[in-house]
Image 1: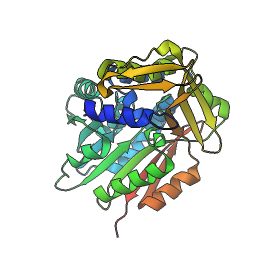
Image 2: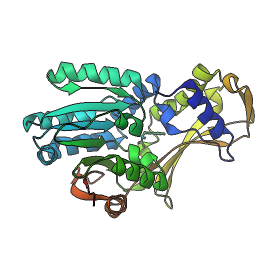
Image 3: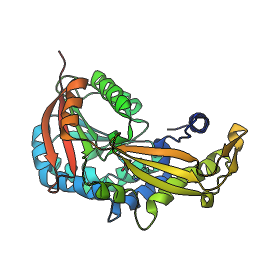
Image 4: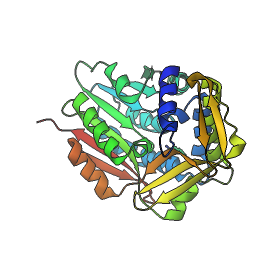
Length: 317
Ligand code: TRP
């Protein structure tokens, strides 16, 4: 779980930078996870619908590759599990012999997911873990025979910078064994208007989702952010290949944060970077597997070619 002190330290580091920034993982407290649930339902936010389509249509194929032998199905950033449920239904058809370990930094989300799965599937073994991704993995022991299958669905991998992605996947590779599997969601490069609309919804839910991070600082760290003095702004950075999101200060202002015993000055129109969401080409995805020690075991797309779930196998030599 994120301790208040870790949160405070990250806020301090982020707001002390030349280009102010707040780490996007702090978007997902209870309120933020609920708002992200609303984002996934937005007409503009094609990502979740595309991936659900992939898992519905191609999940049978994926489940066959996972196979009937004992497996830990370990999910990073499980959230409300709406995508995973579709895959679990296919796994039960095999039938696969698995325990499902959802890992999420939001304790409330993990609890709800575990009880929801029991209700829906009854006999599925679920062990929820409230943690950050790799720390959570450490807490899970391997099945006596069989393998670990890691799910990293959604576009969370795209929230890492290209350098962080390579570090993360290399660290993950190190903690896995030969033959283990990794299924990762990659949002693909596509028409710029489609991309930009997904992060600028008409109903303003994405803005509220970002504002919630400021409100969270107010709630948990005694901050004095007034969200009316900020606007959410998001662009496609073609050179970076990322949608970059900001909260922009509408006026010169000072914000106090009690837990840090500090104040932060904002110029008019000064941005706080809240998230980059990298979009990938197929070629980049295959190159990433190669660089980090995996081999491709399958690539699955939705009918519009908007999104890709890429299945990798751990290679150890
Ligand atoms: N990480 C998700 C994504 O890249 C969540 C998200 C959607 C998001 N819209 C956002 C994060 C706007 C920050 C700002 O799609």
